[in-house]
Length: 391
Image (cartoon, rainbow, N blue to C red; front, top):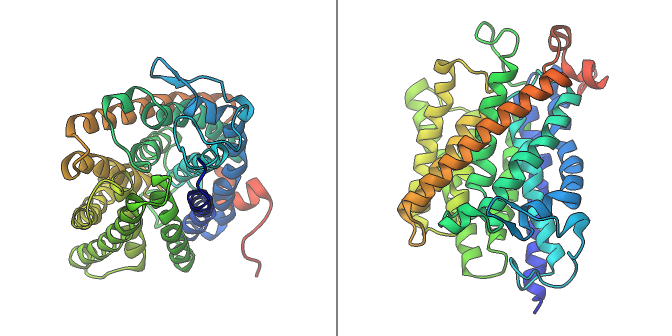
């Protein structure tokens, strides 16, 4: 039977998760140089169109359609055929099937948008669009099915409450590959790349934090105690990680920074995501501590390793998603460590290999990396013919 309260809750949660994509555009936009603001913003915004269309016609069916050998869903729901106003027979029994579909669509939208932070300021828009569409088809849809859609990892007992593997670990692994395939920005390691407007990043952080309550609490799929626990844990982990990041930064670099506070909050949100509905509040505090400390160290490590992850997708989302997923096996009653470890390994390895192939093919066939002149002059003018600020 359809429950009106659960339906309203999930619709509102879907709207909150949708908000996270333009919030991400604002967050990323503040972190890049002025000449590339709009190129970064539109990369997030266009995902709303590209991935929603992909989701309607094949993505939802490949992710949540009837299982085919544990690997992928069938095309039973092609073009949303059979996805109507009756409850889903397999996933959310108290809301219309279409509500569950559109809620999951918002997760599919933001995941490839997160990857854009890794190769910010140096890709062609055409190549980026083609890569993102192919990535949604080849990487996101199978991973979603493996864990949430009745696939082999779910059957193995892997737990991922709201996307530690499906969203964060996958986008982190993809970010690492694309940063390496595309190569560093011109001048990387020789000149500073200073964020042009940290106030935008603060606004983006606040909007992401707000939207994340729909991301995590909404994943309970109904109004119940699990939703309440996930809501509280989301806030607790984020504020703890923010405090720890700023504290570590103070002792390591001598001064706490606004950018550090924003990075810490996002690290906490990403890390609690897979565990949000499975752990108690004290465990959420511990997860926040781990996020603030380990993700901080992971961000520093990129300088030693020499890859240009422009906006720290690997260190924050990738590492955070892995930590949170493993914590489910260590800190929750439902989780077991070995399946969680297998889930991490399978997600990361598959994403690394598939993303490498896709990035190479797109670069060779369509051109992924922007040319030197466009990169020097700024992608806002070169790719889009507009500027964010007119003086």
